[in-house]
Image (cartoon, rainbow, N blue to C red):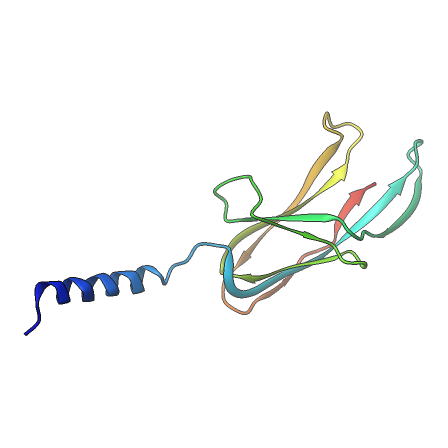
Length: 132
């Protein structure tokens, strides 16, 4: 004969299992977001001097659309590439900072928002183009 505490335990377990099925954006999944950062280097007169994939650049990611503070960051590799892995389905905003002569802070945010709709997705973003 089952007691009330056994029933309570079973209902609590069922609640935990069912509520665990809908997880928010973030780590713990099987999808990946890839991309590269490409730089345009101008001289003081505004003439393009060189362009290249940018190594050792900070790339940031925001999980979901609830705030504007980044959740994780990644330094680009020697070839300008980055990757955020182990992501769950949901909305993600990836961004970098670019030099900006007309901006009060001297930099501007360049962002791309992407939706991961299922498991095991590989999302390749268009190159981020930044000024240096």
